[in-house]
Length: 196
Image (cartoon, rainbow, N blue to C red; front, top):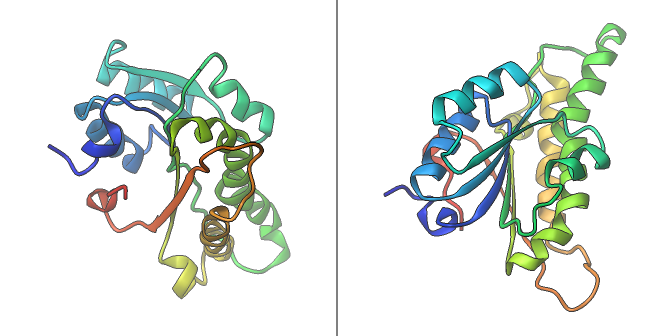
């Protein structure tokens, strides 16, 4: 039995970046533990391959999305009545430096790695309030702490994820609801996916 068992069993979990290496590993663990999954990735071909590998009746639905807007995030869970957790594993890692020619890399990286976290929080936190408590789980990287001279935007974006996650627990939600739990970790391997 995996370490995800107490969170995953019979829960509905949205997983972004599901078709990537870390995402696939999480999906395999969560399915073994009986989770119902909404798998999201911007790469339609990779997501289709994942769906074929796990089987269409494995308790997972697939949605192609880049998480670039509130509306894109809302479409992911259209018709979903309950959501227990969002596990955000999507992101980009592109070489760059501080020269002007890399401004597009900066914009792309911040949008994918940090703005998407804000979009997910804004759209899904109210739905997660119904799950008592729902969980928003975001991944960072040790790069936010030590920096990476060839990945300025990546390092900055992951630092932003840490800040948003820390501040998330203080967000106000309307009405008398149990606020969702915000969790984050700097990834070191699939075994680090222990949900507290």
